Image (tube, rainbow, N blue to C red):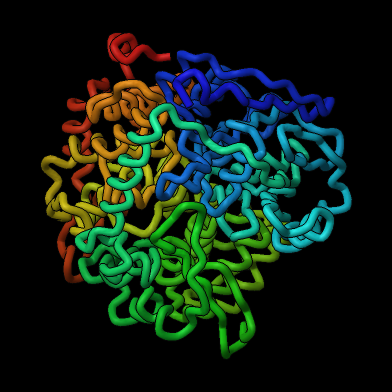
Length: 604
């Protein structure tokens, strides 16, 4: 692969008439925006910022990165990019498993869906061809049944099925896409965009096309360096470390709780006390773990398959209990039964809902119920049985579920308490309280896709799980730290590598991988410059879409209500001070990218 090779196999799929046209990405786009996230954002900007996210005019991009489907470690990712119906920003989400690799092996660097089909359809992909086929016989099915339906039709071997569930069909603004491995394009309401286009599924049978590399010897050296860093005992990615490989992402539950940075009861509290243990990765490993499946080319195997052996959900088997969903539907809602949390996550995977947003919707509903503001409906803290029943109503938009189906901001506004939505730019916060992890708070506020831990996973430094360490309760210096994390993540998301690769690797390793694949010189500085360009491109889109001065905010609960529990007691988020520092190092003016910055970065 040279720099001109990647991006030539981009399929533009018109759902209105079922036609497919292959058009290579402009070479300069690939050089500047790499692939995956970056290239997808460039297409979304080209499509225009004023489109209604749920109209036929919006486009839905599924983009591989230049490393997707290769033998490079942790390259089993691909990106979905569109305008978000939840936030109104540009958004991207990344999915693990084998789907991205199989799309690449079938001959495609990207799929761009345009228009709207007259009736439900799915895309069938095999050996360099794409056909739009009738999906009316699978419309209405949950994702698990949809996967089974197409496996019955096409066989299971080398087949991936990405689908929306009933939530996406009914245009829930936090609906997701999920594949056969229960891996999701999980945030921003991308599933609703699929539903608005009558696109039920993408079914791909892997072909034999592999990723070519320009310099095979350099590639082998780069791959060895990457694998060695991942397996190094000092890294949380190492199976010998006893971190992600042993306990999965939920290894973070006890760590975050112990420093007073775990939001409880809609972030009224910052610790779950001893109850956090019953939701932790350690508890899962000891009590309900049943398997350790992994994604394409990944030696870490962070996904933890579980089986519920007793209680009302006895017999439930599901792919994974992740940290973020376990927090959102657990501690955040005052639930400490991991079995019920697993059931709720499984419902999200089946109906096609973002569990982080769902947990925040429920915690808003619960706090509004305490205030007597829910108009005759109510949901009690910790009522896991009621939460399970309500999830079906929400996915189907039945009764009060219809008032909850558009996210935490819409729910809080409906009940007359918009201030109770713990959200940024319309998207609910993840599992890190900004009073106990100051850098994460700044990361939420300045995230281009709404509150997000993955735009800048500064918690890795603040929790001490990587070589760089930062005091979680110190706000000074977090502006530059957040910027560096954001730019590095923008680049790795464009390659497209798993986020956890950054627990072990950095710009030097990424530069080796890109240079060996393309045959062109590439340095760590080039990595950071490309990441900066991509992050500023996203911010430019948002500025044009109306997100300007004053858009980088946090809920007042984080900036005005001090933590009362140990670890972070007495602390609030000093967002104003951090923003001043951040804007200075970014070269932005109150959150807006100035013209001279755009010119310097050659945007667009």
